[in-house]
Image 1 (cartoon, helix red, strand yellow):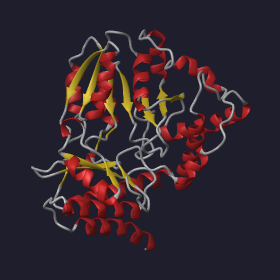
Image 2: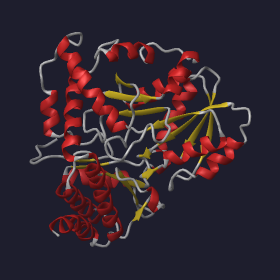
Image 3: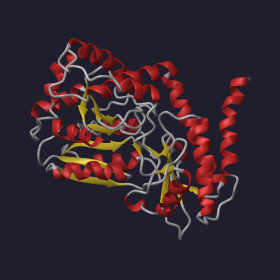
Image 4: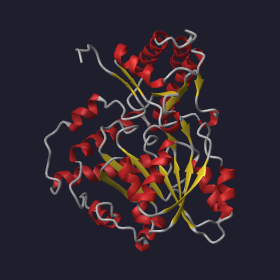
Length: 394
């Protein structure tokens, strides 16, 4: 590759941009992970992580990706042959269900349209048929990055409570934590799984879990094999600021800095910023005359927008062109959306001008690729972005 001046525009739905402050925090000499300095670091980080997830209970960190957190949720709470219900309305639900099958679980899929959020009536219809309580866990992805849909987790918990169904509620917040409100306890979630590289603004490498007392009780009788993922080995260690195995020490430095940044900006402001950038992105898509893949306004994702292209255009070809000409990375279509959509990430360490620059690159790229678009997209986005600052001035 030839030299490229300036900075690369990373607008995939994760990993997201790592702020300079976090890079500087990570760039420290590695310390003894059995020593007092490390214990002080961990004991300072865990309370902030609990606040972010909305829990007063245990929070575990593993040196792993979000896929590791998904596996840990399953092996700690379930036994071989147990039946689980996967609410499937996107690619990352597919990833979780594939892991479950490989572990020997009986996976039942509630297949829903990818264009909309979870239909609680469909969930209730299936669970009401399970009078014997054979379904041991319900799995749902909070924010589906393949489609740009955010699912209402609390609605799923309400269904379980109304039916008095004993199934555990396991929720993937890999792309929502740090970008969208996550309320582990208020929503009645039993296991919240997440990771470091999206809304948390870190490089990949930290898997995050919050667990309820019901999940811990289930772990006492669960029989799926577990060693590295075993919660019990973490419970005692974490109380003293240590880990049962070697942790991702320098990423935990970065995690501490990320929590500081969340506190400085204020979580409500973080969430409003993501909503605003998402609204501007959707305005651009409509200004181009293209279609936002998510068809339900109440389920629009603040993290990313999936854009449907007209027939005859391959989204990967257009992504390659935009990367080559403008040094801008966009997300590919996943699963059945391969070639049909491209995804614009607007999460993490991002502001109005960064998004505006990315949208300019996309508009120029679409024109160069011969996609029949209107040229009002960037202007429509700028109008939305400007409105936030006009309100501040007033």
